[in-house]
Amino acid sequence: MRWAELALFLSPVLLYAAWRVAVARAQPALLWGAIALVACLAAGTLWYGLTRRLPPGTAYVPARIEDGRIVPGHGVPGTAR
Image (cartoon, rainbow, N blue to C red):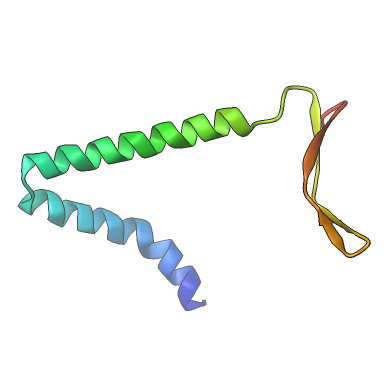
């Protein structure tokens, strides 16, 4: 197994352990700030996902190379798979 794969696999456990240690030593204001930050990140992720999605019934055309140039992926009206 590669080191990067192992690090990605173990990162949630290590982050949880770090959170538990921080909670035991932190002041309440720091904890509420962390909770507010996580809430803002979740709201931003939700907003981004809702504003960047394709309309229903739109088929996604993946990115491709034409004449040595990259044509980005996009949606076309039609039957979605």
